[in-house]
Length: 119
Length: 112
Image (cartoon, rainbow over all chains, first blue to last red; front, side):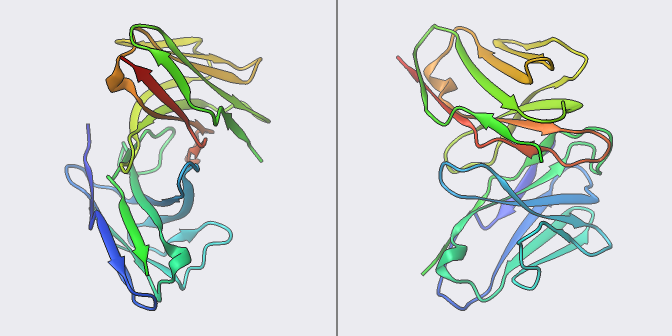
């Protein structure tokens, strides 16, 4: 199946700094990618839909100025957590639809996730 | 809005037995229902997809059923092994370019 990678897998930063997380589709092109965050024993919470060549679509309650998304190419989307605070500590996961774009139905290929800890 | 219910309590079973996990939903029936496996500290991995007009789907030791009358999907793992221990998520896909919605998952623990 298709492979999605994320980098870094783990990051620890000080409060107030910005952290960039990369999501790459390795063997297919993805015009759409999704960013989720997950708290322990909780479900995946969709944060935003990343669209290549256009602005990201954010879910209700997600601050777009805090979570900057850039879909730079058909294989790369980045999430930047700006001015991170301890409450931003979480597990961030990206995914891409199996077809590479959102179509009639889509199994999702997930990245391995990034564990962010803000001190 | 659509609500997905998966048992939050862990399911503990003995090796070799069949594990059955439940996914219930409210409101409209999705066009597709998907099951994923998630290991600790890892992203989910797609397992199976079943369409609303399908009653049952199989893949090796996995079987998924979909009952739109009961608004329920059951996920079975036969001849379970300790390596099957993980969290299993169901996701509802309305189709037509809608993004799947995930349940919180049920943890399965298979004891040797």
